[in-house]
Amino acid sequence: MKVMPISGPLRTFREYRQNVVDDAENVYLKELMKQTKRNIKEACRISGLSRPRLYALLKKHNMSRRK
Image (tube, rainbow, N blue to C red; front, side):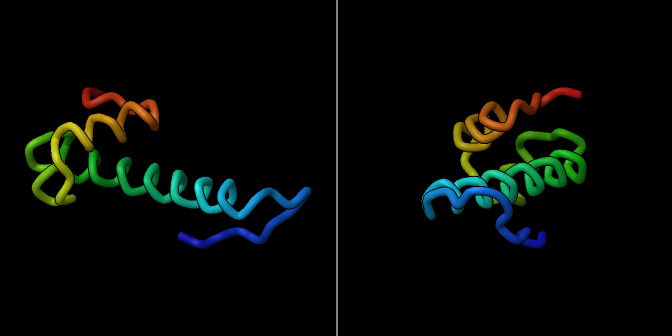
């Protein structure tokens, strides 16, 4: 993932960092769900995330555990 240059008005560093983290989480979760064929147990094993944390991230990024 490549961090894009800042354009437009400058936000706070905290806001900028959170956007970068959110983008990275989104990309990672999409690939994780794709590679595990949405198998939550396998996704937890590969990612090292607990089941509740994985569900929280999927909800945060509006991703369903089902297709």
